[in-house]
Image 1 (spheres, rainbow, N blue to C red):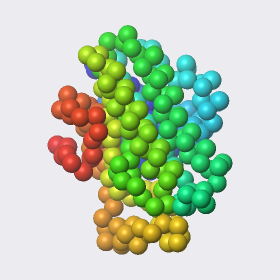
Image 2 (cartoon, rainbow, N blue to C red):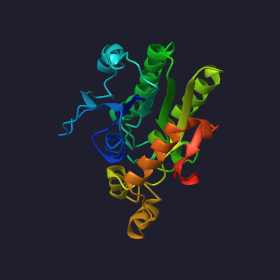
Image 3 (cartoon, helix red, strand yellow):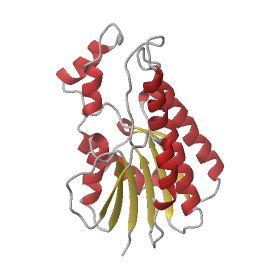
Image 4 (tube, rainbow, N blue to C red):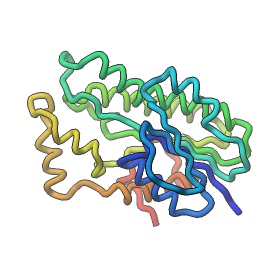
Length: 244
């Protein structure tokens, strides 16, 4: 029987939780969920790791034990955990929040991707690293200096990893999930318009029902990760493909 391993960061809420629930519905998938909070889920296929990914010293000490050795047909890392951060113009941002955002959105995925490649470079399974990106990686948004910057840097890191992979059996994706109905969108809607000129647009996304359910996005992400041979480009957007 085919067996897969999926490692998901930020699995306790939002898109990460939707991904977790989707993978739990599938057969022969072992899941490692990494978040600060544990979920009240009792499943033999789920291992939860309580870890604050913005604390890089703690993460560094845990890296070697995160990726198990076993016989798998596919091994997937989804760096999903992220934080919109302070929605403030540059000049009003606070250093502590900036540091936490860079740690969580950029450095933690870099640490994890590096450790994942090191752990599985000689493993015969198909290996996929999916870094959850954003349209903000390529479009400057006033008030999102930290978020745009960290997502852009993570996208470039992903493209470099792909360039280095050559003919190896690793695949790398920088995946934009679209406008998903999660707690992050709620945080965005609470911003002050004086700090975030696009506030009205995001209020209208909610009012007009334009936010996509996290469960639908999770299904499309799982399709891409299960069928990487159908997707040649590193940068992907769930809005631009369909899943059967």
